[in-house]
Image (tube, rainbow, N blue to C red):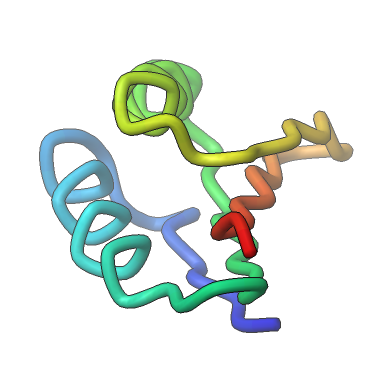
Length: 72
């Protein structure tokens, strides 16, 4: 599992960095994307849904964790 910490980034940079990292996932790999900005979170989730990634969203104390998994 890898963690991509984007808590200091805002869109469009957060979305761009998330895109660059999820395309590197191989079968069965997992990536945790950390964001604080709700608009960045919404943009990243929208992109992941359109690309058919498996994901889970956790709303933590001061940020969101989007867990992305590449299908096996």
